[in-house]
Amino acid sequence: MQVSFDINQSSRNILLKFLDNYSTEQLNKIPEGYSNNLIWNIGHIVVVQQMLVYNLSGLPMMVSAEMVEKYKKGTKPEATISEEEIAQIKSLLFSTLEQTKKDFSEGNFKNYSAFTTMTGFNIRNAQEAMEFNNYHEGVHTGIMMRISKFL
Image 1: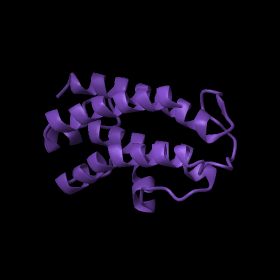
Image 2: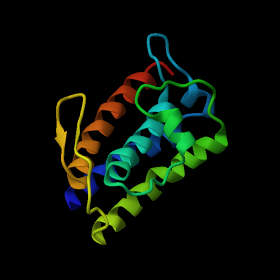
Image 3: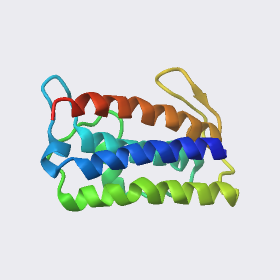
Image 4: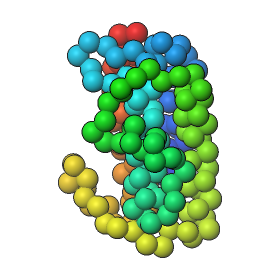
């Protein structure tokens, strides 16, 4: 599990650089030909990790229902995200990872509702969910790197 967490930490550090190096306006800009922006991708990454690991384990998520509705699969940016909400997402980027590490070390993931991803990968437990999550974050980080070329 440690390698999975190390990979996730690296991913989150890359996402932090986007938050630190781009203005609120740049984070919210949707380039022509794209359906989302940098901040939506980061919010989506946080929400999906919570849904994959916690929700499917029957445990409470660390994100609000409103945040889930705003960033879950199938959504897109509907309004400009404020500096306050960006700060909240920035905080969740690492607090969710730290809590996940703690919950794994304490053995809190006992149940899991198996799930098949759009790519056909069968996730049977929280550890597999975390491993798949790293792939998911990589996909969205790649999209963000492409978006950043237009800012």
